[in-house]
Image 1 (spheres, rainbow, N blue to C red):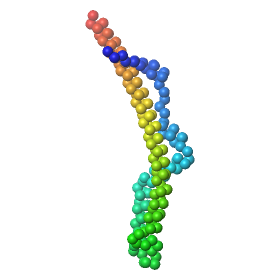
Image 2 (cartoon, rainbow, N blue to C red; image 1 turned 30 degrees about the horizontal axis):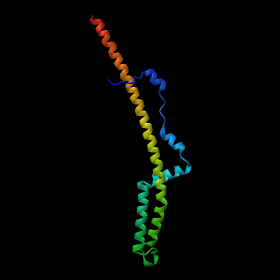
Image 3 (cartoon, rainbow, N blue to C red; image 1 turned 90 degrees about the vertical axis):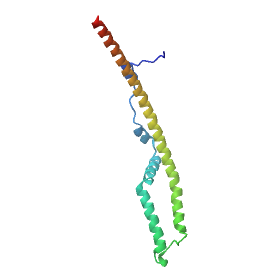
Image 4 (tube, rainbow, N blue to C red; image 1 turned 45 degrees about the vertical axis):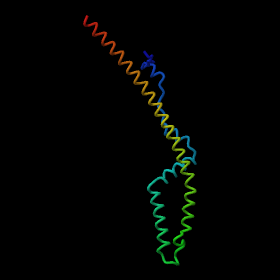
Length: 149
């Protein structure tokens, strides 16, 4: 028969620790630059940013394909200036996105750790309650046995 550790409610209350808010802890640890990286990452990953880039691309390409020849500034079909600017934007945004994702990953790990702590705490609470119920059951059975005698 395996030996189990029994936790009483008093013992659990005595040793229990308060639940911490990982979201607040994470935000307090971020530097100003980290906060900007997360903000940029969140905005770049939005439909609004996609629509801005999509609209810019469509307008740029349409202008340089269909405007009068003397008004075109990035000739069809190469669109060299558009490609250059698009690549510059990508080069600047790529490291920012990676930094933001790393920060969000650390936040995710901290939340998972806090969830694990809460689950362990809940498991101990459940064990204490079950022990309490088991004791009550034994008491009720002994009272019934006594009453039948």
